Image 1: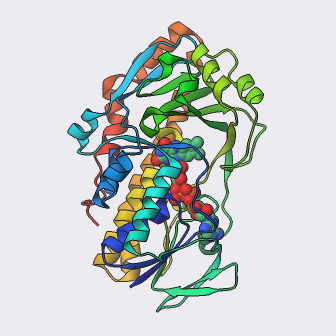
Image 2: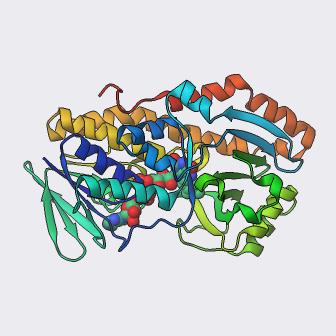
Image 3: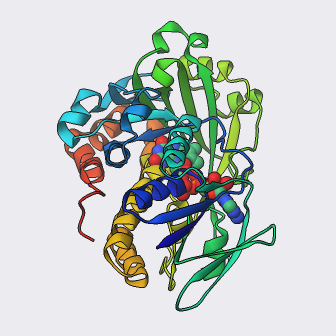
Length: 393
Ligand SMILES: Cc1cc2nc3c(=O)[nH]c(=O)nc-3n(C[C@H](O)[C@H](O)[C@H](O)COP(=O)(O)OP(=O)(O)OC[C@H]3O[C@@H](n4cnc5c(N)ncnc54)[C@H](O)[C@@H]3O)c2cc1C
């Protein structure tokens, strides 16, 4: 069996590795001429790293990652701190896998290297996908350069603006959330010494929140600042803003946030969009994976992890059932979990940006209640415990 994959991002490359591991041939078609993500971090919870370990790249990734010791909630103005959860050894003890924070280009590099080891010519760069055609026996993937390739199944792992999704289900109805996500990376050496800690911090405030965590064995620190504002609607990893604009958005926030912003030379901004969940992901020999199937707000830090889980479950299904039945099994196995994650991410928007946070006293009561240990467990345990390598398919 040969599977064609449109898109060589985190989801497409993980799926390719998982398929090869299950004895299924793959070819990946990626539009970029070279594999490089814009500099940004990604958090990989135990439910994601468990899959990467099963694919044999856990230790390679570990060498480039950070194992944050914990995550904390902080008040946007006073800097008061609450524990969200312990990570480090506790993640391994409790969930059997670590929690990594990783520089995206490092993750892609590890995935691509492993793919080339498994099949040297599997990755086709500079190969932009245009459309598809299928019949009962095979599927044809059409590239922008006029080439057509054939396979037994096609996987659309081509992200939020997926061509494959459009070919199957038409233009989507993306809606702007009214929230802009700012991103930046700085060398830790440029931050005040007390900020160089191996923890992930989530500063919550009225109408905005800031997340920062260390990368690359603690040498870099990643910044994501989400703010409610209606005047920016471009959903892109590469759109730049200015430090002045970013500073104006977070005026009045704690001195640590001001110091962080002052250290970011080039901030990027991304308009956060939501798409209604698709009724179906699969049609005949074609299916979708990752953001192409179920893009979500980044407020549970699980979008990439869902793409990683998808890839492994899909490979198991294709190894066990005939193509069309396998794609249906995959979709059934993944639909409820990804829908619940998508809804949990959206619910965090109101939690992280709650208006009661404006007042320190009221904000303290709100945080005490919303981040009480029982409520944290309800929101995260089911996410971290899932095992894509054994879940029923
Ligand atoms: C600010 C922010 C922070 C986030 N933080 C986290 C986090 O901490 N943890 C987490 O798990 N998730 C996080 N996410 C979500 C995560 O980034 C996405 O869910 C993840 O990148 C999805 O992976 P993917 O492979 O499905 O899509 P993508 O990463 O978008 O990859 C798609 C690939 O397809 C290629 N492609 C597109 N069109 C074509 C075409 N026509 N032909 C060929 N190739 C094509 C693209 O070039 C790209 O390489 C965050 C998102 C944002 C915006």
